[in-house]
Amino acid sequence: MTLAQEFDQGASLVFGGSCGIGAAIATRIAQGGSDVAITYRSNRERAEAAAATIAELGVACTIHQVDIADKAQIVQAITEAAQRHKRLHSVVVAAGSDIKQPFLADVTDAQWEEVIAGDLNGFFRIVKNIIPHFRAHGGGSLVHISSAGLGRTPPRDVLSVAPKAANEALVQYLAKEEGVHGIRANSVAVGVIETGIFKRLEAEGVFDAAWKEAVLSTLPLKHFGQPEDIAEAAAFFASNRSKYVTGQLLFVDGGYAV
Image (cartoon, rainbow, N blue to C red; front, side, top):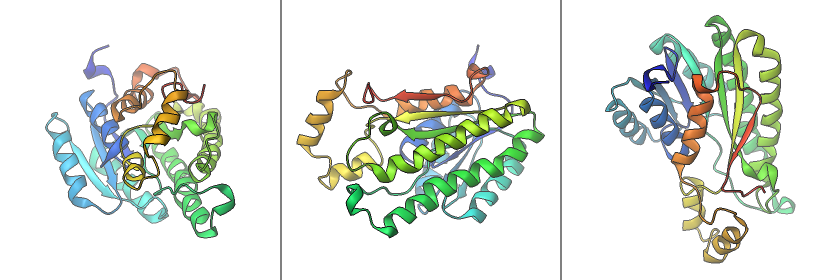
């Protein structure tokens, strides 16, 4: 299959596509010849820079402001991206809350409600509102960027893992109920990737040298991952290369969950 055949006509809407893992995913999909729509929460300048880089690959890239805890902004982004690109062949959900790292006993109500509002309720609203568009265009692919913590239960990661666990049920139901309409749904479970939240927690001293050494000692592959590792898996699920794959959870984690 050539790159030109990798994706259907239209665009991929990548929530969180302006930075980190999301930007790597958007770039990889663009390298496959597809137009892309990316979302950002507040840093428009960074989103414009990401879009300009993607446009250099010879595809169209639009930007859309979305706080994933805001239903109206989610609906608007889907509507506007569909209008601009005529069709969305896939949606990748790589956006999420700025996750803190408390133990379960120390989680505050405010912290819990924030991740549920964004990471769970936001994901539900993306799924719910993309179904009519996918149905009207003969199908589509939803790709959920999940957590390898689902397979390992790492300490102090409950705010990330708990909403992702609920999202996995939504992915399964989407795959089960909407396959008849040509809609596929899959997840990529992300391990320790050197970008985004990892960089912030590293700067804050949470992911210090001792933490890194301890985690690396448990990894069969003795190094952390890069955004491009996740991008390859996400692009596979978004593309026609996985046209007979649905309801799957793929761990891209260097063996973190083993």
